[in-house]
Image (cartoon, rainbow, N blue to C red; front, side):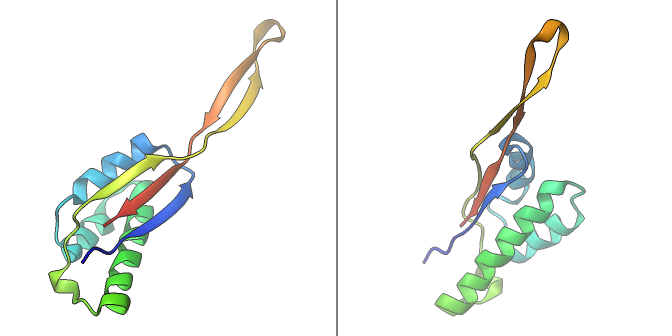
Length: 106
């Protein structure tokens, strides 16, 4: 059985989030929670929240035990980008891209 959890539209680039997600690929769920608790990155909080939700889904919906759960796959995908502009020299405008991402864990 496969249980998943998705957190959408996190205000952080997917590239930064992937650095955190790679650390928990293929680990036991309890080990992954322990690792994410000590990772000093903003993205670790969001990945931990998604993982906690996936564990709760497994316990409630499928009556699974936490000790048997493994992270099959954890993915950070790009979401919509907010496009803004800032004034530049000689009346031109420079783009500002505010990137978002989705985190999915199985």
